[in-house]
Each structure stands twice: as C-alpha cells, then as structure tokens.
Length: 497
Ligand code: ADP
Image 1: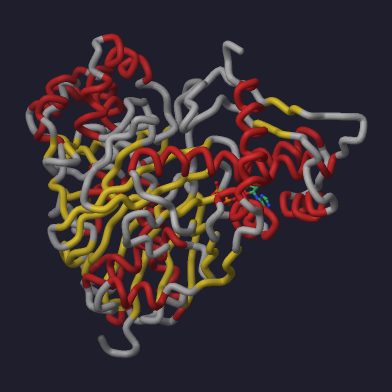
Image 2 (image 1 turned 180 degrees about the horizontal axis):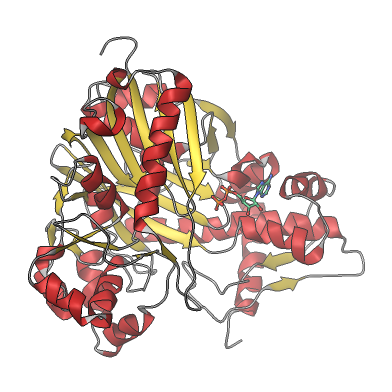
C-alpha cells in the first residue's frame, strides 16, 4: 500500500467508544474516545441507547480523522472490535432500534436460563455452542425481548426485524443498511451458533422460539466485507476486519499458535488460550469459543473469566484504606519480602472459573500478630496471580497443551511486581508488549491483513513489540508449596465449608 495509507480501528466497548488511526508499522497516530451511557431501569438490568452507540462511535471516527489531519481517502480499511454478547433488535425498514440494547451484564433473562437448566438442556447448549448457559450470552436476551412484547414477536415472525450484537449493528449502519452481517467470534458468543458446524443451530433457535430470519450472515474475521457509505466519513472506506473484544485482544497479542495465551488484568481478568483447529470441550466449566475464522480456516480458544482481580486492589484502597491509589499497591507490597504466610482469596463476588461458586466469600488466612498492611497488599497481588494460575491449570488440563509464556495487558499489567509474581507462580515467562491497547490493535491487524497493509501473520508478529519479559525465579518446590497454601485458602472460602 502507499506509504501514507493508514488503518482505522473502532473499539465499541461497554462504557465508551474509541477510534484509533494506525500507520503501517502498527504505531498509533491518534485516538478519540467518548463515554456512552448505561441505563438501569430495574435492579440487575443494564441497557444502552443503541442510537447513541452509533452516534458516539461515528463522532469519534470523524474526530480522530480531523485531529490527525489524515484524509479519509488515506484509510486503507477499517477494523471493528466490540463489547460482546450485547443484544440489539432493530427494524429493517427504518434502521431504528425497537428496544434498548441489552448489555452483556444485564440479568433480566436469568429466568430463561434457569428454565434451560430445568429442562435438562444445559449440556446440549454447551456441546453445540461451547458456552455454559448464562444470561450473559445474547440468546436468552433475544428470547426475553420477544416474550415481553407481542408486537415485537409479530414483527419478528414477519421478518421485519433484525438482531445483531454491536458489531452487526455498527456494520448495518456503516453500510447504509445494505449489510446484515456478523463474524465468527461474535456469533460464537450468542449461544445460538454451532461452533463446529459453523451454522446457526435450528434446534436451539426452536428451543428458545427465535425466528431464524432475525439473524445476520456470519462472515470471516479478516476479509473485505463492503465499502462504508461514502457520506459518513468522506470516503468509501472498505471494512476489512471484525472481532469481539477478547478475541481481538488475543489477535493483538499475536497469539497465533496453539498454547499461546493472553491475560487482560482489568477490574476482573479475561484469559484466552488458542487451541488451534479443534474445539476443546471443557471439563472445568471454561468456555469454548471461536477465536477467529480467516480464509475459511477457523481456530478456537478456551476462555476463563476471573471476577475480582484489579477490583481487589480497589478494595484495599476503598474498603481498607491502606493505599490511596491503585498504583501504590506495588510499593506497599514490595516493602516486604513475602506475604509471610498470609493468603487472601478475593471471592468478593463469589468465585468464577474454574471454581464456579457464587456463594464463596472472601477469606484471609494465616494472619498473626506480625501481619501488616504490606503483607495483605502482597497477598492481594499473589491472589491475582494465583487465580490466573487456577485458570491456566484448567486450560492445560482441558487442552492437553502446555503454556509456554503468558502475554499480558490491561491496567494492572503495569505493575512489575505483580508480573514477576505471576511468572514465578506459573513457571513460564510473562511478556508485556509495548502497546498494551491490544484490543483496538487486534482490530487494526485483522483489517490490515485484509487490505494488504500486512502480508501475513508473520508480518503482524514482527510488528508486535515486547516491552518487558518477566522470567520465573522460583524453583518447583517453592512454587508447589505456595500453590498448596493458596488451594487450602480457596477451600476455606468455598460455600458449604
Ligand atoms: P477495566 O478495563 O476493567 O476498567 P483497566 O484495564 O483500566 O480496567 O484496569 C483498572 C484496574 O486495574 C482497576 O481495578 C485497578 O484497581 C487496577 N490497577 C490499576 N493500576 C494498578 C497497579 N499498578 N497495580 C495493581 N492494580 C492496578
């Protein structure tokens, strides 16, 4: 491509929309970001105005183009990444949403999930979609919308409505209403997609009484889909890549081979491990998901979410008041050599993968007269690392693949002490890239591969730069001794003990 060409990446997240322009070396030239609002009409419900999602996202694209002085005609292609699972229904004729977007966190369809379980269908859903049934996923959100309003049901049955996750909704509007499409990674989070046959599943659609006519066409994650309506941004920019946020981050971390994995350390943590062309069914309640499908070849991943990691550090700040900012935890924890036998299980919202105990409660063990705030701080960082190890162990057991290194990003990955502890506990290196905004970078890579900015994945891998590599410093004995103490503490935090 000509030297002055650039890639536009859009990241439509749960709380904000962002647009970033990258040059051909993968360097960000500029970025524009604005928050989007959430609505809480009832306890447990989280909704968004779907029109605002479009307006804010498109405004950020215009802003970044203007601020960087790039001409719209220089943009080789656009890549999109998005909050996953959030469900939107719209009218095909007008393009207007017919209900608020139901955000992934929203729980209004939990009774429908309980019903799936009561009917003994949970295992069937997991076998077909790779997902452990939960209200997070789009399927029961759609069913709930159709059940809650007879008019929507009638219009859906008549083929007048369209369903989409946020990627589809953006693509519909980018195409001026001509394309109703999604990609493999987002389709695999609906709980309606057969991840092995690569088709919407009629059995599950019938089970939830969802008309097939609602659903988008599923396309590859890195291919030219269409050109954007030229009136939007001043040029008919081709759309070249789409992926859900966690899959995009995995691509942005260049996890291209089986066993390559990334962990995002934010409020909670999201771990994904590439497992290659076979979909591995988890025996440990991890999720099996499509990583991406490119050039007709689909690759899979195992995914585990940890609810409380960075937010345990927030609890030290807001609950205990022993630090004033999250970043201070590093110095406090570093002021002691070890946690001196203190273990903290931050089951502040139950325990997720691989324990899945929503009634588990936070537990601190091993406290003595000599225990100080610094020991608790150090035990908190260890807890983040131990929980990651729990999920990695489950992934290795499920996939039969050994982890060779862990790539990291997210707010808490800036903490060098935490990263060192993580490497010590895993016994493999922890690698932090220079550019930690891996989600939006992944969308740029996927799109730039389709528009020939990058030739192939090796070319992408070459542009991915390491900031720091943390090598493990503990021997096997120390590692298993410490891990044993953690497992004891976890047992004490589980409900029923
Ligand atoms: P999210 O995207 O989930 O909002 P971020 O990636 O912005 O999260 O990370 C913020 C989280 O990381 C917060 O929970 C905060 O407590 C934690 N955090 C930020 N800096 C540090 C640090 N230096 N050490 C440990 N935790 C940190």
